[in-house]
Amino acid sequence: MMKIDFSGLDPSMLVKGNAEGLDDEILAAPSFKLPVTVDFDGFQKAAVQMVKPAKGTTTLAFIFKDGVMVAADSRASMGGYISSQSVKKIIEINPYMLGTMAGGAADCQFWHRNLGIKCRLHELANKRRISVAGASKLLANILYSYRGMGLSVGTMIAGWDEKGPGLYYVDSEGGRLKGTRFSVGSGSPYAYGVLDSGYRFDLSVEEAAELARRAIYHATFRDGASGGVASVYHVGPSGWKKLSGDDVGELHYSYYPVEPTTVEQEMADVPIA
Amino acid sequence: MTKQQANWSPYDNNGGTCVAIAGADYCVIAADTRMSTGYSILTRDYSKIIQLADKSVMASSGFQADVRALQKVLAARHLIYQHQHNKQMSCPAMAQLLSNTLYFKRFFPYYAFNVLGGLDSEGKGCVFTYDAVGSYERVGYSAQGSGATLITPFLDNQLKSPSPLLLPAKDAVTPLSEIEAIDLVKTCFASATERDIYTGDKVEMLVLNASGIRREFMELRKD
Image (cartoon, rainbow over all chains, first blue to last red):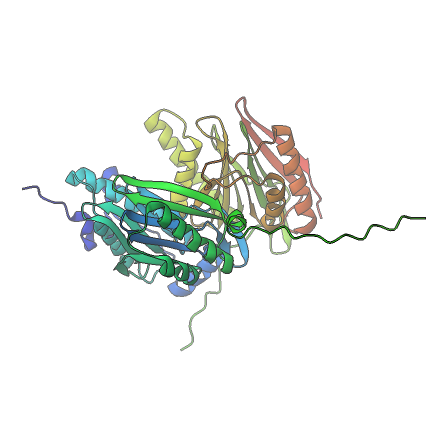
């Protein structure tokens, strides 16, 4: 019987982080230098102010009969300044799993990349792909071990494994929820409104994509911290595929075209004598 | 008992602005040469730019002591890479190395706002922009530092490259020629110098293209 390697799930292995040899470096948890200070929390609060992580976002994902639909905006805001309109908030962990980004951009990018490495190592060690439940648990355990240190991650892990489509919400408090419909970010209330009212399990792929696109568009319309490009991805049995990337400014005019109004006879300029 | 407050901060901000623009077959990276602390100028002649590999150049504003430490770490890592792989690091590889290096100090960050520019393996210009803890993305142009909020809207207006997230994909590099891009950079710094007290003295520009790398200087207002 094939022995399954659970070392990736062992919580004590994560925090110890022994680095003997270069290959162990990848498996072990990264070791972080900490500041020598009496007031760690105050220092972190001040450091966070300096870094000013990009917050404000709208991401959503839902399961339907043909898989998982994942969508996000692309705006990064630092306080009132828009630092970027082209942030990739849907992270491709591997060809059949996606992660969404909300919260600290560097935290999400780094830990999703780390998760991708761990998933690949699991495949090599166990000769089969990791499940969505397993991958989300790996991430949740890592984030739990850094709980209270100021990481800011609100992510959804979406994928297709042997059990079919899978969707988990994972956050930096260590929370992990299995579900069929999630939206994360400052624009999520608006996205939930559109998503919940239009959702049916038996949507087709095009209908589901349009629902996701509309939900992101409406969130960007009402939430100042969301905007840019609405990206929509579909995760099916053979992996994920990017379906569309549309500028939300242009989406507005395609949903609500400007009616040309009849112009009354304009007053002609008085010729200068 | 009242909470203990630190009397000393390990950080300082030395000001300055960095800009990079990617073209079809070139990349311009520029930074001013003023180093300040508070309202004083420490020197008018400080380079914020370093060439990390034959096709990667990094410019950083923020706390120059952290910038110098970061430059040393990256240069050492690049040397190790050359010994192990017998070749230079590509610009996208250097970009990820910089991101990881920054994130490994996530709980005691480098106060450095970086812009990495160079040529990718196809010879096209590439610019990567970072925050202080390592989140990065490839863009067509970027500005960082004290004058960034003045320069970025101007570059948005002149260069507005289509977002790399659009589908069908559109190229992010600017259609401008190398001479036009250099002129644009000079204009950016001249304008930022007018309205930002931390930017001025001189602008150092590095231009990378297929025939190599060249350096130009332009004088700015010294007030």
